[in-house]
Image (tube, rainbow, N blue to C red):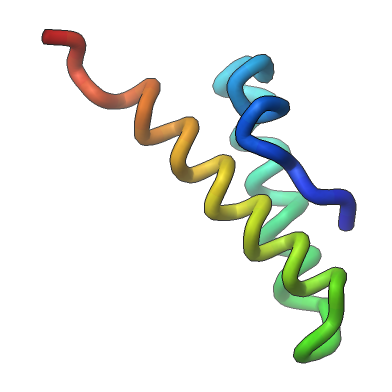
Length: 60
């Protein structure tokens, strides 16, 4: 899986992020332990989760 960066996550819609999250989750589930594919999928999940959390946070 290609890495989804924080920048890329920031320019996507929320619906697109949910779709990317599903793709990254499935890629992580099927990747071989210790592979670059697994590392990219896990970091993508973190980046997508961080962007979704920012959007869900109430504005002051």
